Image (cartoon, rainbow over all chains, first blue to last red; front, side):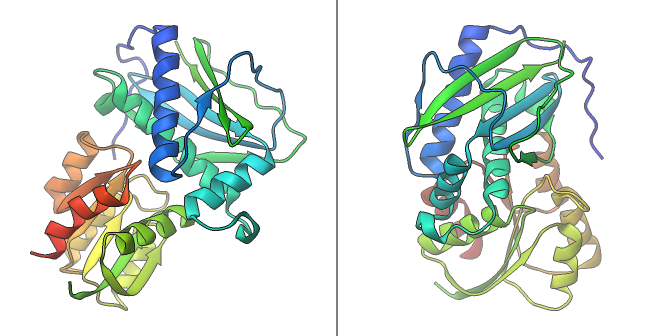
Length: 163
Length: 125
């Protein structure tokens, strides 16, 4: 079993550069796995509640949680595009698709950070669905937020870091 | 291209479908596709079915991909080559999987062309 120590020397957070990397990581995942382009949204505040929140934990040189949040409609579209099926044929599996999406964005992001890739492990994704919940992170460090436009719908990608 | 019987091991059913689709897009003639959600399920399936190629995620609950590869080698559960599909590309656990007997790896996210590039040389051996 592999373990990762969160007290390992963490990279210095460059918020602007990391936000760009987070956006690029998400764009690459959408292009390669969903065959569509997403673009950064400016001035899109992260809402308190969304229908879906997919979370992946990071441990090692980089410790924290990466989350992807979106509406039910956006989750349906993500699933349809990942499976290359018409929207009407999506039955269940939105949570599964969102979890994989978060997992790939997190993996792609850490691979882009110099010296972090091999020193940071990802957890199995967790996906919360519903309209009546709030997530509370115990992360006490920086938070990098990227809002992206996907098929005219907003998606929010957040990396919350532990110090 | 010979007809192939494959086993896809991933805790995400969506990802299992994507992998199957990518293999078909790569031109592989899949005559049997078996699916397992973790290494333990995969070992059970290998006791019931012979396969020609195994594609496995690394990060899975119950039994992860590294333990699965180790068990396949230790128990001779299958002679089929194992290709890892993971977000952890070119990193320590991928190296570990290769040292345990995996024949290659594909890093997520991937395109059908990348699947073809990594898998064809292995199935054509």
